[in-house]
Length: 185
Image 1 (cartoon, rainbow, N blue to C red):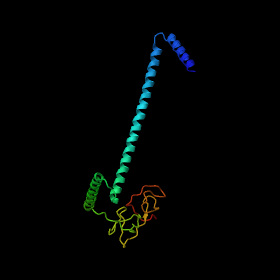
Image 2 (cartoon, one colour):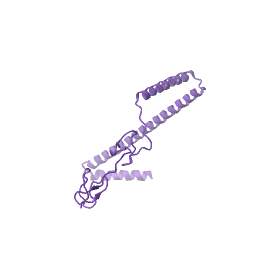
Image 3 (cartoon, rainbow, N blue to C red):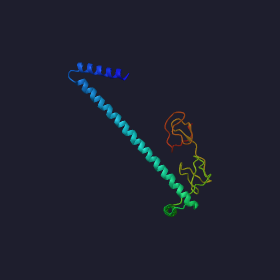
Image 4 (tube, rainbow, N blue to C red):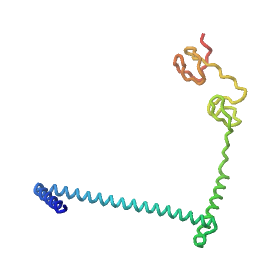
């Protein structure tokens, strides 16, 4: 079978040589072969580089697991290697320093006030800060002595407006928030 393939390739080469008197086809075929070889070499290079990265990642994970195991043995009091014990004591000292820095950070940071549970604005339903007289979201009065909002009417057609309406439901005209008129007669 390989003899047949070799003869076929030889015949194809002879046909191309006879057709290609100027050498352009052979040059193009040679360039194509070179690009294919370069692409294959780059593919293999990238594959090997990825395998190296994967192995390096596995190495880092294994070292991390080893470190965790050594620290666990140290904390359990069963670690016997003096070199490893020294390294574990260094980790213990660093952990103490971290806890000290965290305590200092907590002391420096301002305390966040905790919102009062259940204090809600009767106008918009948003949770409000305790002790305030007005809602920080809608500006509504939070005191017990609230007066009901006045009934508002459209100045264009006299239709009654809902609280917070921006357009009249009857005539469609824009309504300013400060607009309040007596009912049209």
